[in-house]
Image 1: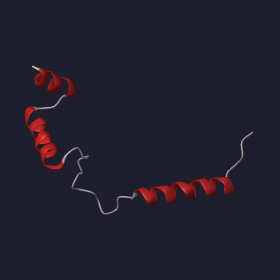
Image 2: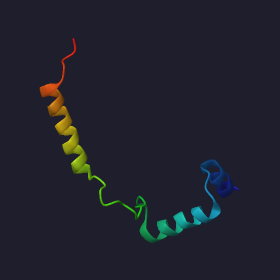
Image 3: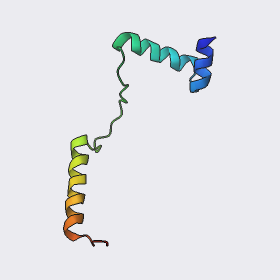
Length: 66
């Protein structure tokens, strides 16, 4: 009964739930990694550098508001 309630509550089917259990038993509790990462995806460091550039640029060239 608990499993049925859990599946309905989370909108998860039986096959997906069994796949998650299988992965958990093999690897432990780790986030799932999608295998189709694109070549042009930005890394976390790239995102931080872009944000730093935007901040510096806006401080130098932005209009200051009262």
